[in-house]
Length: 90
Image (cartoon, rainbow, N blue to C red; front, side):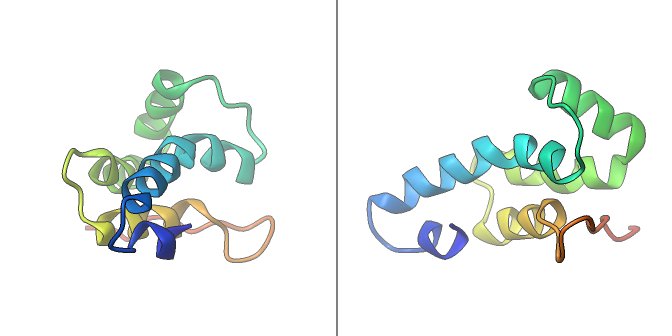
């Protein structure tokens, strides 16, 4: 999905929004947790992993770069089933 969001056509915007709207649901699914909606998921991230919240939050900012979105996707999507990355300490 990310490469399609980088294309220079009208589909780019659609793919970008689709990717961002699925990010929190995917975050929960890959961690085998219920997604209780964006507010509760963001509050849980704030409580449990503030560094991850900062990465995801940067992707949700209006005008976020594709690079910021790619970093959030890399954080959310596991390398292998049952694993996930955490944000690097800043």
